[in-house]
Amino acid sequence: MAGFRFLLAVLTVQAALAAPLGAASPQTRPEFRWGGDAEGGAPFVEADPADPAILRGFDVEVAELIARDLGRAARFVQVAWPSIDASVARGDFDIGLSGVEDTPARRARLSVTIPYFEFREVLTVRVADRHRYTTLASLGGRRVGTLAGTIAYELLLNAERSAGVLPVSYDDDVHPYADLADGRVDAVLLDHIIAARALGRTPGLAVLPVTVATGTYVGVLAKDQSALRDRIDDILAAAMRDGRLERIYRKWKIWDDGQARFLARTGAAAARPDRTADAAVRPGMLAATRRYLPALAGAAFVTIVLSCLSMALAVALGTLVATGRIYGRPLARGALTAYVEVTRGTPVLLQLFVLYYGLSSVVRLPAFVAALLGLGLNYAAYESEIYRGALQAVPSGQLEAARTLGLSERQVLWFIRGPQAFRLALAPMTNDFVALLKDSSLVSVITVIELTKQTSIFASNVGSWVVPGALCAALYLAMSLPLAHLARRLEQRWKSPLA
Image 1 (tube, rainbow, N blue to C red):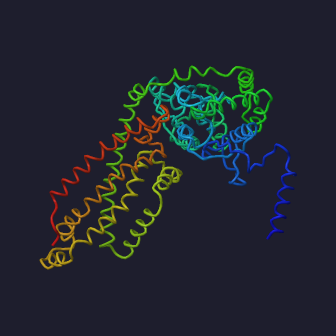
Image 2 (image 1 turned 90 degrees about the horizontal axis):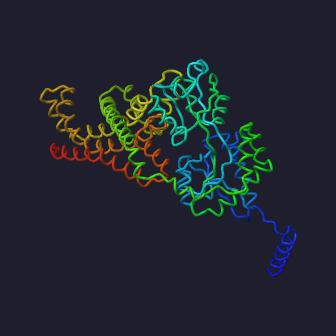
Image 3 (image 1 turned 90 degrees about the vertical axis):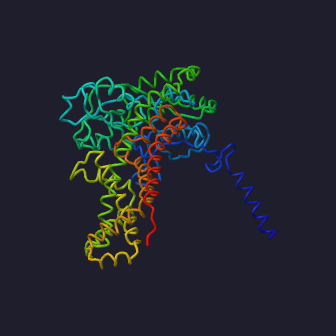
């Protein structure tokens, strides 16, 4: 044992002497955690198709450049793009980088780096429409898609008020262009580098030679991380002057003359940007709330209408399925059982994607119709099990007595079995309706702007979930509590023991 310890000590000393002075292995270097959204795809952050464990993209290389100059090891943290600000503020990572746009509201609540990339907001249309639509104003009365919570979305909201443009919100930057090619929207307003990538994968589209607006990408840090922000500013400015950022942008084919002028102008500025103006641009929460209240009310109306119609479909279809599984022939019972098990065994989110995007080559359902069918068909499977259990819970003695009195099976179901089963099913039906009311938030993935999605946009723009979240919760309670109260009154009124 003593010999082993001596040998271990010798090897340790040799390893220490062999290591370069002042060098630290990647394992011992402190981490530089940066947050981004790999779902956004190239050219920002994406998984390498050859090896999904490897990330690539120009924001990946910018983060690695910063980490090297800081003497730290870069580590990526996946976060949904709309949540980057909130996550960096709570300390989930050191900096957020993933096409994060520079806005006054963002500067008011976070430490923001100097801009490191300038983008242009451009319109993409179908090739056949490139002479018909030439500006954003020319799209009055037309549906224009973009990412929610972006500068482009704010531009569309302004165009809605001034020119009657109809904004369509998406959670990613791929489906807007797919919907444009399929005719579901008439144009897409997004950053020029996103549009250029879309043209490569979606034929039949064209980018209009008009810049609607310009903006810049920045890194965002927690408000108390101004010292680290200043060090990163120095690194980015040096990379602009010595050509390292240019090499990254050329590699990703996002370099042009406008970018050259932007980097030269930004990198040449020796003084850091004036941070004293950041606090002055903070939008008042009260003013922002008043501005968003009409949109929240409209989204709440969409939520309640969609939920009521979906539940009506679920109840009607669920009743038919439950009845068919009890009274149907073996083949019909097998088919209905398969429907129930497949529907309950797959996520409703997947079903919405299949209905809206998967079937688009066969039938192009409007977003609201697809949402209605998706939620209705999904909940019908659950409702059918409730009704089937309730029908089977009616005592068999009552059914036999009714048949003895000469009632047909249809009369037994309509007058004896059905009413009692409805009383048994009422409470779980109410629970399912409240659950459906909340699950309606999922339909935002197919461009339906319901209450939760509008709240998310509100929170992204004001930089806090406290007030938007409280308003959203209040609206959901205002919609669900009356229903629960009504259901309790019906239960009390119709309550009667089964013999």
